[in-house]
View 1 (cartoon, rainbow, N blue to C red):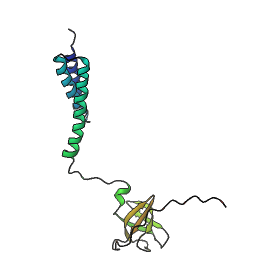
View 2: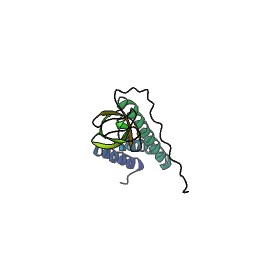
View 3: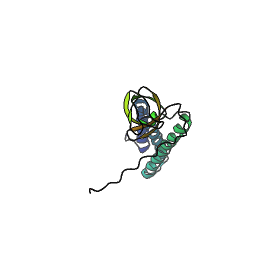
View 4: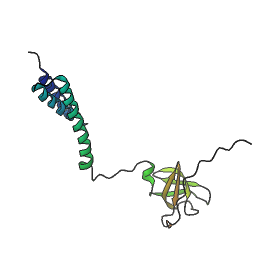
Length: 165
């Protein structure tokens, strides 16, 4: 007995469904449903091009809809997790090398040492400060009690290349 097109699509749907159970990606389910729909189209007598079109259309539509559904329904209450430099903004650090006026120093944040500049005047070693801004590998900090009236330093302009005289 030779398998017909609808049987091949049905086998593909079963294999893809089994893969969905075995894998954790929640992706092959939509292709299994697409193969099942193509099996129904083959059973109804449509040609191979129509079957492939239905398979592609159903699979792509379900895949796209599931992304939107999961993002907007299941993830609507999820909190955005800040990582890297974004996570340091607003955190507290400890001055490990005094921050003098016009000169930088060093602060410890999350167990790491960072070069820092003060937005609220000189800061002695051991003082707790808050990270206000990050510029490259340098943190701009201020005393937690300092008023926020002092504007943050604008991003430093790259120095223009000066020719050799």
